[in-house]
Image (cartoon, rainbow, N blue to C red):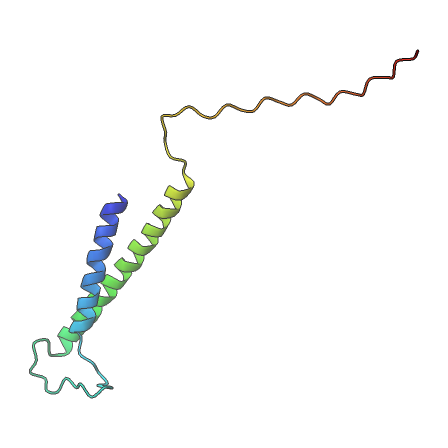
Length: 105
């Protein structure tokens, strides 16, 4: 279960990075402006689609992260099933004896 969830988590992370990179920068803060509107993903509807897909992937990423954390906690606290016999309990210690009375001569 953990391996499957981890694989899904990695795929979601990769898709999330791709979605963020596909979106056009609105500020162009580094001077790498996305000039005209004749690009591959241009238009207001496409921007809404990418934003919505990014939000869905981010929510899925958070859910899988929390699930992996919970599964890791459960596996760490649950004792492993072993075939070995449990260790025997230690014998109770005998009560200390009172010192013997001195022998009178």
